[in-house]
Image (cartoon, rainbow, N blue to C red; front, top):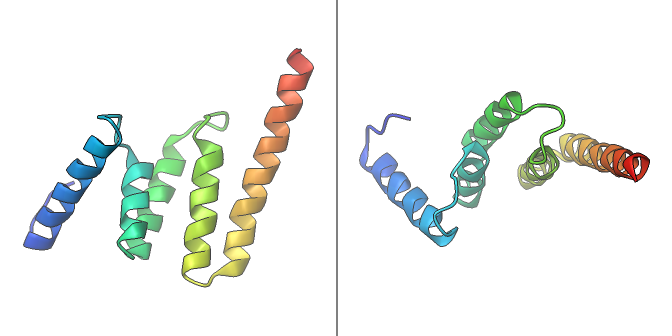
Length: 105
């Protein structure tokens, strides 16, 4: 990401502070999306969530939380149909993972 304005510089500082609060953990596009959502920059948050979604494999453990984040974001902008779609994907994924784990037992 290229920073080009004072607002974006402030944004970078907030992101660095957030990373410190997370204990120096990895900052990924999901973390960035969550931060943008907290800043009420919903369109940008969705952009980064979707970009991250495209990077994940279908069995990535981060997928469930990302679907939940997308559902929450859709609710925040009053797109309740889309929110239900994302939350249903999360539920379906959780059920599939539970089935896989019970089969391997």
